[in-house]
Image 1 (spheres, rainbow, N blue to C red):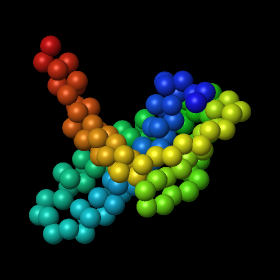
Image 2: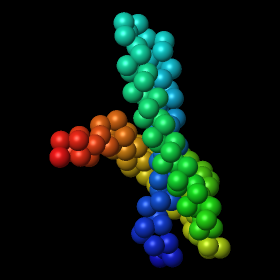
Image 3: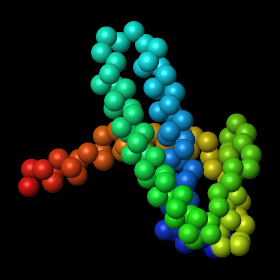
Length: 127
């Protein structure tokens, strides 16, 4: 049984997923830079702006964790699972995450940051 409320666990999970997103986008940046695309600049700008948005959100997550005395540490990883330790207000909890779930959730967040975060902006401009 976890002592961590759902709202705080969601923020803790952001501290896991957002750095993964940055790693993926850094690799993509290298791939686009070394590719034979004719017009690289728009792709590079899209990746860089997405990374800035993620970094901004990650900074907010880190501030929240610090203010609320919450720590997240990756303990170990194997082919199937990655184990994290959460220190929540003095209590330690270990949580296993299924690696395909980590990958799928990271992919969902990547879709959000690349496409869906702009949907609200377009709606507001039309109104």
